[in-house]
Image (cartoon, rainbow, N blue to C red; front, side):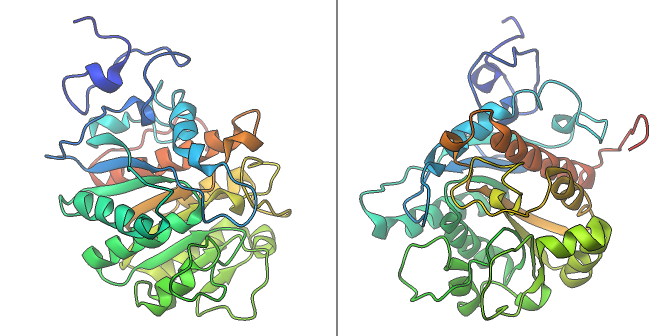
Length: 322
């Protein structure tokens, strides 16, 4: 068998990697093997193409597909700025997308939670692509079942803690529900990038976008890590945490947000944290003709995997001034 092209289904092992055209071939995240055999797997990538809980522009059901497509260049070379081949240290598979029935909204939470339970019960970590931000709620339910109450790092323009009745499917209320259900430890959790108003902080430490602009990413990281310490840290990354200049392809854009460089610096600084899961949500490709938003989302996901690879023994080899 010639070792080039379509490695998503042609490789013999999960960690095998070979030459691929960035503009061709079967799409998976970072060209990882499509598989549902989780034996020995460290991280499972999967998509949740659901956007019926959105309050403004739809289209995030196409997010997982767009993020996979945007990841092809990241799979081409060694990881930047880390200088290692992540797949040499981390066993990653792409599960594909969780099957959801949008015509039965009462089934969505159960379908996603059962999907997550199946993966977490195999002692794999989850890297998940939305979908609108509501999908984080059943993911957090599953992670809290495994790890206990979670420290949440939420990057977002919105608090997503508006009034919740415990029933509605709404991408602006589900973290209030998660706190009320004891799934999130607010005393160790941080919200970053917020620039919309709620009368209550709900107990979270809020580092607004203007605060980050003024005080810098270093101070931001100091607070996040001091609060989370060694508790299980779940990261929920809503791409509207970025300014629309850096993430136009999203459903509820708000001016004045983070720059992409600030976001990646914050993410890359979390190496010492107890990283248990990441979701990247609210990528809506129809509103972004240049794939800017999906490229950013793929980069955040890629860099989180590199942090896990370092925990597995990967050594950075930085060339030049970083």
